[in-house]
Image 1 (spheres, rainbow, N blue to C red):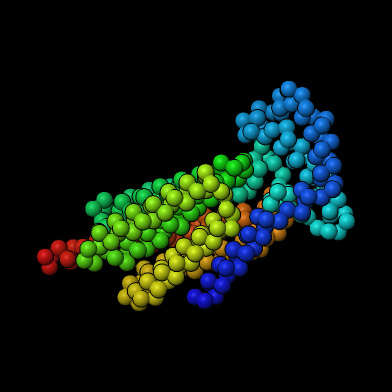
Image 2 (tube, rainbow, N blue to C red; image 1 turned 180 degrees about the vertical axis):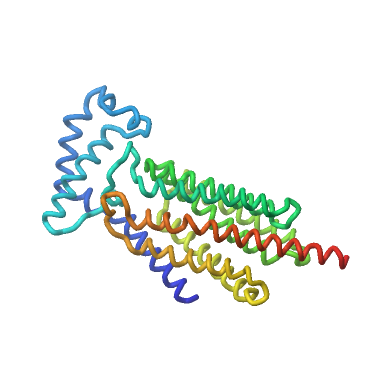
Length: 320
């Protein structure tokens, strides 16, 4: 467990470093190219009319076009000078496809979204609505689908609004996973509903407060990453302890343990930060690819766990 927490901490520092550093856009070559492009192409009233319909629909402005096209000769210069590919505005250079800024990450975000949709349909077929945590699982699915939708939109086009929604969507998944864990631990305990309600309100208020400050006060990348790491670590640690306690008595719990371990492992893709292969596939995209099949494992656990809790519920009703 100590190794998992250490790995997550390393991920935080690597991500923060990638956000704050962007050598490419600070280079003299890029700056000179950008100024020339802006002066020649972005001074007239019809500066954006030359762009294609899809680029205009995705809000690629004349200035954005200049940044994109000046990026590639700068990348070539860095490579020829044996300096290596550098980031621009905190991102690796990606080839746009149909105006999509990060094609691979977009596709893999859609795969994650589809995974949740497919598995919730399977969940509804195999679990009765009267089973404990039936609604909770649907709330979980909705929050995850909402998060992956904004992840898709963000990777299609990175602007301030889509970036914030992507961050908040990911954070909502982490927070709800913590709430799900707390509610599962308290299930069938005395006053479990009151405790679950208290934690739900507290977590909900904190999410609203964080969303407000992110939108209207400051988008603090370091703090946002820190709280994601903190709540993520609590979630992984909590579920790991729960799995260790019950895996011998409940064989299906091994699915949960495998899921938690794989989540921690796949997060390490964020450490393997490298220039995108074929200018499309980077470590972040691989991270999204690696998480797509994990939804299958998690929902299988939720199905079996609901069946187990349904049996517990029937036993308690017989004793009542």
